[in-house]
Length: 415
Image 1 (cartoon, one colour):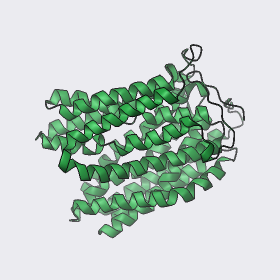
Image 2 (cartoon, one colour):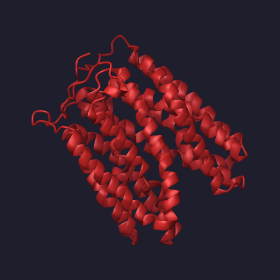
Image 3 (cartoon, rainbow, N blue to C red):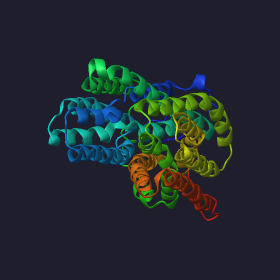
């Protein structure tokens, strides 16, 4: 397949069958940067502790956290749109620079207004690399197996980084304080911005022209079916961080027990990624998108995390967290594979940005759904609702597959 061009980014030529050791420097920079930014991503998981240290009332703290969530959701759309409009390099550099400024503001803010503004700005750029990196990978690697391989290792880097965040943050929060952790997060983002400037080529004037197809993205039924199927599939993933600790607390388990579920999840990701990624790469060589695997991941995640509703011990909850990992790995690779195949080259950023809001939306939906289930039916209802979420996500893959295979559908141009 010939090299892909983009209206917003200089294409980087590569071999159609790149092995990991032959990835171009931009890919290595993005993978290492993804890991570093997530490993130092102390702001999001430790923000509630920061607000608690300030002795804010529940209403103010909840508002600050809600503003963070709004920023996160909006940031995916904005960064995806800007990646197509002004270029990947300029958008990623600007986002990481804003992170380097807003995170320290959040560390030092004390008034509700200052905290709210800093939280909204920080949420805007905390996960900004996701849609931009997705677009860059699609620009750089012309074949689907190569993209699937990188997506799998990106997911591995994110999970390994998240485990590092918990380990390092837990060890340093006491000795140096949570504000200092926020400053560390900012410094790593600043360093990543410098690396981006040095490694990623700028867009040429001709490529910086306003791309076409953004209105099509917001009316594309393929994208919105993928979005809804992904949201329902990812709600069980988000439940690992929101619903699981609530259930464990009701069972009288200490916070350290929840920490073991995270260790089990991270260990499963580290152990299974090298096994699943080559298989997913082989699957990506087929001409049809991985819609079936996306549906399978919904079933796996719903059943895996749903089994937590039947647990009552640390071992039981840790097992449920580990059981969900194969579905999680497959979900991100499969959804990205479908996204790469339906997105026009000139609108990869906005397509990735729209899809990127699924995780932010899942983070908002999971605790609401889990809290309702706990209040009305206890752990067993949590098991049922989590399973149903995965089942509905899998069911939506049926019309998505049908629409993708319609003979009347206009094929996308990938090169």
